[in-house]
Length: 124
Image 1 (cartoon, helix red, strand yellow):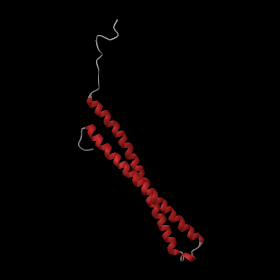
Image 2: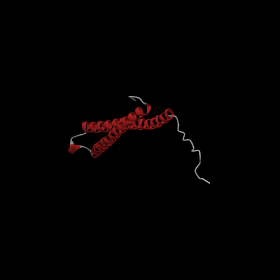
Image 3: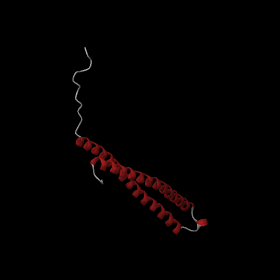
Image 4: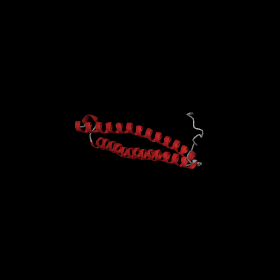
């Protein structure tokens, strides 16, 4: 008795158009996730820029309305240092957010190139 079948089973594959459509849907899912993350980062960055400007304005206002360095009150000096520290931390975070925006932009550009190939398009 032979283990091999006399009639080989026919290999069936899906329609190439359906495969391309499935690939495009997957790529679009990833694209949408990147766009959402990019939107979140940009929103965080915009809010942080406003807060950083507020810290700078607060420090400048205290400097304008307080005496010279030697005659300022301890509270004014503490408030100025706090505002300067907040601005420095915001600037550091802005650098991190800018790097994320750049990275997500590159990912999106790469994915759009891939998506265009999957869809058979010249541009996304």
